[in-house]
Image (cartoon, rainbow, N blue to C red):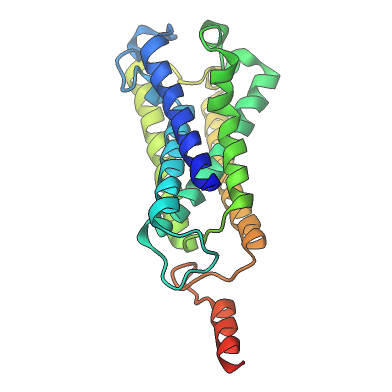
Length: 245
């Protein structure tokens, strides 16, 4: 019950923040051409993509709490559980990356990531929900619940599809407006911009692997037949031992 309450609370908190942002906050963009994109043009920001992703994850996790299972190694894994576990494999690296990237650039020069003309419109609590608690809640989730990561093939396909989709949208916005979504890109030349993107994607990939490794240590179980293309040897071995005894 406590796990279900946490998932529902996080999903509700994130939903409220997005609703408040869409309803009450209107900020000036660097150029007028940036106005008119979906979600009051918030769709340009990876922060919003991440916040929506975290909200979807915690809502699906809540559904799994109610209709699925949180068992360490269920004999038959419900579809909702498989969906939850797959979304987590994307939600974890995305949340950690957003927090690290935002606060690192913020510490160097706030204007490069969260200009005063925008930051003054946001209460600090809203900013932290978007850039801090996304990581806090997903880390809590990592250490307090069981999951089976998808195969590397499926996991990478989902992860890179998400990041490539954002990058395509990121460059579409630039092509349409002539301005960069994030000011940090403005002073960089093209080689440095691509280097920044490559390092970001590489970092996110490293976080994916880190999440998978930590998960394996926390869950202390072998992957099931649908994970990484192998059978759950440990679980099956344990079951056979029990039958013999």
